Length: 581
Image (cartoon, rainbow, N blue to C red; front, side, top):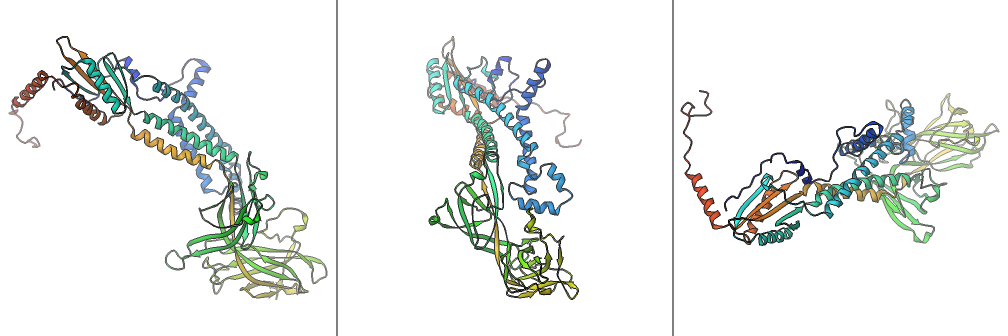
């Protein structure tokens, strides 16, 4: 075939009318304020806000803003941990409170980034979608006047009729799934619309992702509940330890169900370098939705494997021990008995807790009094506390012991003011003494302690395990998850699908025959458009074979190239081009 060329070099700058050949529907960004005065500045600011650059910056800022929510306990997830964190960090806690770092996802500054990103995405998606719809409704752009200026070009002469060549090219491009349009002896074809579909899907998915998070924050609620083995509760506001609602989800909207902790399995590694590391936390529960107890089911809850009941998910977030303590007064009457949760303070579950006996009755001195106990529960106690104090050596219950201090006086529970059930207010209480020393007892399961001064006895009956749960209702999670999946699919489409155009022109020559021209243009630099054009040229030979005259001319050109003498060597150049001479 003669006059057949393929050019993959960058073409010279196209004329002004070639700007219509842009293969992207992305809006053109302005370099500065458009117009004059305030209106011009508003337009410029809007264009900047809806640009891809600003959207990426806002998305990056949103990711940075979410980091404190992962590192600092949040009120909406575990209010108890927030209070513990504030107790341990009294200096910075007020500052964090003012910065809303305990409520990151509902803070003013996080919401501001969130809303700006919403507006930016909306301002980018809407015009881009309409522009893409216009591209789909229109025919592929007509062939440029000068096809030789395209990055990929091929041409040959044939004896076939021009209309036959154009019809054959139209048929072949259709077979290759191009959108092809035949007009004026030329075929314009376009392919790769999934690239722009992927771009739009990615942006729409981000919008759905943010919308899911927004809906979750407006219509979600979380509650906390700590239960000892054998305890159960109904999901009502009066039986929850804490509850955080939202604008469209209040305590009246709680999902009705019943949950009971039947047992708890905790396993720890007992040898090797990772001794004490948790290996299994499983809560064995019974539950039923609604109020029909006959529909009781059995299930398990593990870390990161919540139990779904109705529209709520129950997450396992904590575990510890609850010593079973019985207190008798001086008359031998039981004034307190039950399992009291102690809170872990370290990885070995050294736990602290208090027992408040508010109904003790009359004391040895004939006046009404109350008793309070504070202490430690050690799942694996050391042989001696010298040099270490009361600490546990292992999180498993290998050698459990209970350390107690006793107080008598006014607990302050009758004032009507709320109290922390895990702390003992000793301002109006006096610590019991024995032999002029603070009264203290070290008890193993089954052992008792006779309180000094005739206040009765305390018996360490044994212990149970407790588990704390987070009850979460987040209706927007499925929307957010769907948005994330679609965003990945859209990103794949935008990265791996190439937008490209091919033109075929068949022109009848005055001296006879037809000149066939093929040209291709791709949005990105790729060899795929050259390969497709070459394959199309080969397939088109069946309907528009190159004329024999063109083939003879091509062979003559090839022979002349082969016989061309080599250029004489420069006598002044050294024989070895790498030589330093």
